[in-house]
Each structure stands twice: as structure tokens, then as C-alpha cells.
Image (cartoon, rainbow, N blue to C red; front, side, top):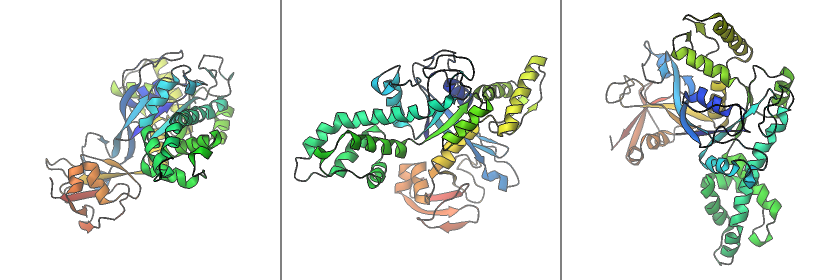
Length: 393
């Protein structure tokens, strides 16, 4: 399962975002370091279910009338403060947890209502643009510190006649969540001395920075957009590549209202309908949320998750079935499973995603939409429904 992590300074709204995205019961407070122990939960990205191309909806657990929700892991840990790589706040704990994350959502208090340390101030008093770079900087320095601490080992290994610096760096960096392919991609982009003795701090920092960019892509969630000055939101969007305005509190309110039958709303919807009895104050609050949704096309929570998975990580959703005619599994369930695969994935990749034994026993695949066999190296696309024939199963 893909793993996404929420990063940012304390009191920016990470735990509220986490709760809205997972509906898990976690502590939310208006003070720094509300989160001490990391929270791990399941959230979902949203896409169109292939059942929309059939006469009837599939009825799968994570399909709501053609809106398909695919599970991803969401991690929320203690907030970062400047100096986290040196252990300030709970920084080392946070940074260590990040080794398992595939991407990071940097939750920023777009309202400017908290200072650099996460302490509450008047809305607009702090410039949220100042918060953008420090998360990347802290992660880069943390990784550089790991490289530095292991460099003596690299230098020792270099005395061996069969030493290969690429192999040595790969062995070291795969220990912090990078794959061998990640390291190879980074080393192709970075100029570096072949002799470890010739490396200096700048070389190690450059390697760390490129590794972080390769393995931990970041998007910015401009949280508290409902109370943020418009100028602050505009400046955030000008200052970072991908910025999603959001109101985590608004999403949480809608999810709770939907659970109790007060509103008709699915995560990611561009509107909602009040279907239950509400007080005047509740109606007023819901209408304020509606105003944010109308301005930004949603609360931003679902959009942030979808953007980081489908656009930044470039994943596609593929549906394995056992019966290519009825799109069912062995128990007759229609489209019960969905897998997030990298763009360019093949039927063999899907087979291994289902189970390693299925992949080992792979024979052939069938495109369930037209009933034709597809080659082992065929590139799958978003929404493909595929039957895998294997010696196992």
C-alpha cells in the first residue's frame, strides 16, 4: 500500500487533516506537539470506477455510485520546528518515521495564525511563505547527517581493490527508504568524485538533497484557506510548484455530518446537500463551508491526496478479476479489488501486486473490456480491468 506522510510545523492542522481523511479518533489541539506518538491510518484516493461503463454499479465496498476510493496509508507524526534535524522538538522521531513514506503532504497554516514554532498569533501576523522551505531543508539536513555519519565506513571500504562507489552508496542509501533504482537515478544526475576521500560537505549535502527530491516528493496543502487572507494564498501558490488550498476543519465537519445523515456528501464532491434537520448555527456553518467549496472546487483534502498519488507519484488504478466476462472474483463479487501501480506498469507487474506467487506463476493476461489477450510487456492504463491467468490460483 502506498504510504503518504503529513509534514509541517506544529499547529498547522496536520492532525485535523489526518482525522478528516481517515475518520480516525486522534487528539486535535490548539498547541504545539499535540501529536506525540505517530498516527497511522487508512485514507483513500478517488477515481472513476470502471463500473460506470456497465449498466449497473459494482457494489464494491469502496465504490459509491461509481466513485471509487482506493486505500492508501496516511501517517501523521509530531510537527517539525527549525532545527529538527538536530533533535529540536520531536524532529528526529518525525524524520525517522519518514523513511517509509512515498510522498509528503506539507500542511501549511495559510492563515498566518501560527508563528514558525507553531505558537498561536493573530491571523495574518506570520507569513506562511516562510514555512515553505524549512521542511525540505530539515529533511535535506537530516539525510545529509545520515550520509556524514556513514562516510567513514565508505572511506574504509574504498581501500578495497574491488571497491565500487556506486555500489557502496546504494547499500548505504537503501537503508533510508530509497530503492536501488532511486539511488541510480540520483547518481546519474549528480557530479561527484570517484574517490570518497575527495568528497566534502557540499558533495554530501548535494547528494542528500537530490535523494530527498527523488524519494520524498512534496506538495503543499494550504490549510485554513477558509480564514486565510487571499493575498497569502496567492503568494503561496506563486512560491511552490503544487499548492492545494484546503480547509481540513471543513472536510471533517462534512464527514461527520454525512455519518449522521445530516448531509449527502462523499469525499471529493464539489458540493453537498443538507438532508437532515440542522439548527440555524449549524446551517450557517455548513453554508460557510459551501462557500469555500464553491471557490476552490472542494475542501481540498481529497484533492490533495489525489494530486500527490495520481499526478506527483504518477500512479494508475488497475482492477484484477478472475472472470473477464462478468468482472468478478471467485466469489462473484464485481470489481472487488483495485491496485495503484506506477505508470507504465505491465500485466506481470499487476500479477506480482496481487501476490508474489501469482507473479511467479504468470501465464498470460486478458483485457476484460474486449476479451483479448494482452502481452506481458503491454502498458496498462488508468481504469483497466485485467484477468491474470497463473499456475497459482
